[in-house]
Image (cartoon, rainbow, N blue to C red; front, side, top):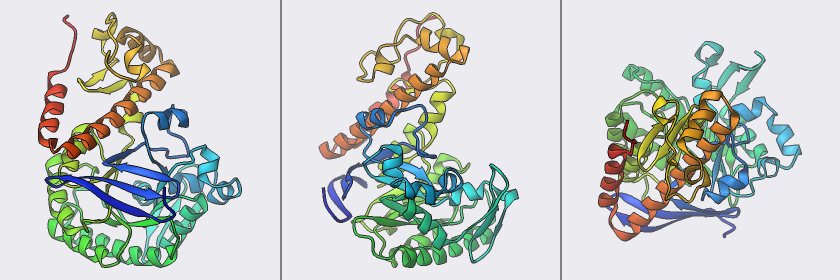
Length: 376
């Protein structure tokens, strides 16, 4: 525990890093996966469950929380930590990605974004200053700059204008954030699928001397090789002694390959969303419980797992729950998925410390490819 925000680099294996982010509400072991608690809840999970699986930090969303129940209300009720019963670190994203998805409902200017709520159509204004204000009202420990995220593919001049606007907004966010001991504001590297623009963005943000840096605008439809090429260009341009966060990524394979390139922090809705739709992530790869082949399969998802959802329920029962539309199916599969993601991160941390990440990554890929489907 510390009263300041600190990042310590404990071990490296090639470009991969094993570190710790320390702050007043706790320590984040990196590489880290942050379960997504968009509206103040990790869907289908109790917060105690999330913590018991090994999560050191969760993510909340500025856009959704400002609309419902409202940042000022959350502040009056003691802040998001108290409101959601999560006393550990919370990172809030700025809302920029969600605003991007409202293309038909928003107007963008140098000042910020004016948009209509997708809930009730009420018009809201989000400036860099207002984004930081909202995140402060929520009480988050790590706050993200407001940025413009461009969906790919896009023309280079569109990507460049967006990247430059995001840099100007980063400067305004830094001023608005000021000095908040124990908390941090991260900048967001943009630049689409253009390596030169990405490096330019990273170097400009580094000049702001922020406490951490995110890579945004990926996982928006581009192929994995494009994402990895951007990381190959960006990571060397970011400070070695500060945490790096790849936003909205991703699959287990995405995470492993990104860790190998020097990323420290991840978030993604994939494990929770997949669980609600009948898909399990395991060391044997993805298992679609909607598939009829599981109807009489008495095996659990993973007999060797520490997670009861993976170990104690048959695939036949999970298949039944999913097909019947029972809420318990989504709850159990979400539990399994978040457990797997946290065990994946622990395995990566251990492998980096032992200097055997390449072998560990190869073994993971082999297990996913082999699978363990029962004979039919």
